[in-house]
Structure formats: C-alpha cells, structure tokens
Image (tube, rainbow, N blue to C red; front, side):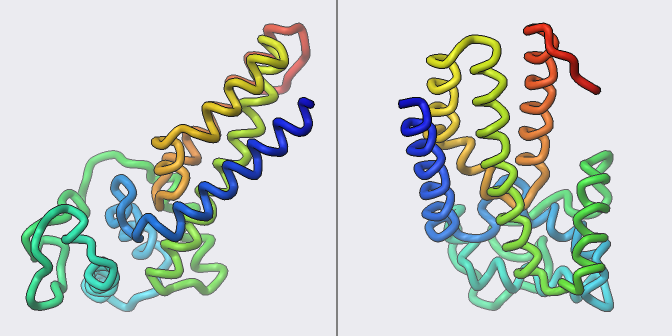
Length: 200
C-alpha cells in the first residue's frame, strides 16, 4: 500500500508539473525575467547587454507577458524592460541577490553553448521541476523517518498538490534550489533526531 500510494503521488506530481509547463506561459514565475537576464549576461550568448535585453523582451512580447498582467499589449514590440505599460524593474544593479545561482547557471550555459535566452529559460524551468521531484522525495523520507508512515505520506500528498509549490517548481529562478536545500537540511536534522549519523 505504501508503494502504491507513493507511486501515485509521484506520478501525480510529475503530471501536474508537465501540465503546468504547458499551461503556464513563460516568464510568469516570480522574478523570471530579472534572473534570466543576469544569467544570460554571465553566459555571454549575446555580444552586448542591450542585445541580450532586447532578445529577452522580445520573447516576453511573443508570450504575452503584458496581457497576463492585465495591461494592453504594446503596439510596437519593446526593446527594453522599461518600455510598455507594465515595466520590469530592478533588473540592473539590484543589491545582493542570488549571485551564486546566477554564476553557476551562467557558467553551465556557457560551457554547454546555450546562448539563446528562450532555451535558457526552458532549461531553467526543467531544472526547477527536477529539483521539485527531488524535494518531494527528500521531504517524504525525512517526515517518514521522524513521524512515521502516515505523516510521511500526508506530507508527500501536500507537496504534490500544493499550488504554490507547483509555481515555484516551474520558475526560472533560484526558488526551487532554495526549497531543495531546506528539505535537505530537514533530512539532516531528522537523521540526527532519530539517532542516525549524518555528515554536514
């Protein structure tokens, strides 16, 4: 029964992620354009910063970014983040930020020769979905270890059905990586609480 329920939840989460990837338009995740822009600059797929910005805004225009924010579609395709009835702000020079995530993703894209901004977006979305599946497994293991089978399965069901977790898991930003890191920290704590040894 445990294996059957767990397999059902795994398939359910995978199906919801696949459906979300089709139904949720690109660039609708929290801070997606800003994060991908920083990564694109590090990856070096465009000769100038202005050309990287123009390519990203052009992709947003094709995928109806403004309409999804209840703004009229610009009559002329914008070239910068500050054009149009809804502006993308704090793209350049924002203090702090997940620099390690940007550097690692940008280096990976540069090494793989992935310079196109839309391809980068889809790879980041796929990576977030893969980390979501790992988070699901880690949380199930940690909660089952600490609280027992019923609690483990219940928490797995919550993760598989939670709408906000789905959105985070399909976004081109570091949120899915942060959630996975938190799940791994909870697993480490669960191992300590139950008397197992763990290397931190």
